[in-house]
Image 1 (cartoon, rainbow, N blue to C red):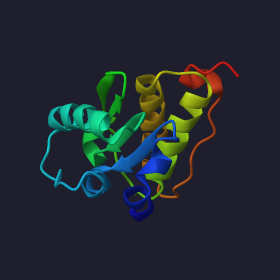
Image 2 (cartoon, rainbow, N blue to C red; image 1 turned 180 degrees about the vertical axis):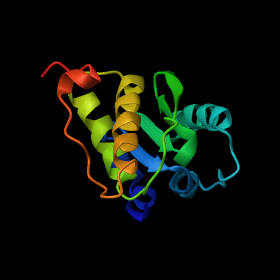
Image 3 (cartoon, rainbow, N blue to C red; image 1 turned 90 degrees about the vertical axis):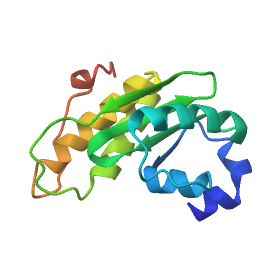
Length: 142
């Protein structure tokens, strides 16, 4: 996040920045720790305009994730209600799912849903292994 804060000009070249709620607070020099998903969705949409960042996703742990695009699109994807064994790897799996969705032409909202499902699959296993999925299971036509 130090690079993101120090080199905002680079972020304007990214398609999408993914971070957690604490990192979003660092990035925007604010404290979002007590914000609800509804509040974060609105805040994120407004702050993106000022920061001139194309799109951003903020994960909120067990609450889910909010996202916004500079064109005004915004939304919230709740976390799946599952039995958590170990959260190790959840963020990596989420990022991989969002990236895969965007790579295959999904909207940001659809990509966040894919990331949420993939993260949920990892944290239900004590081995922290991502199960193998077929692209079709996520609505991706390879």
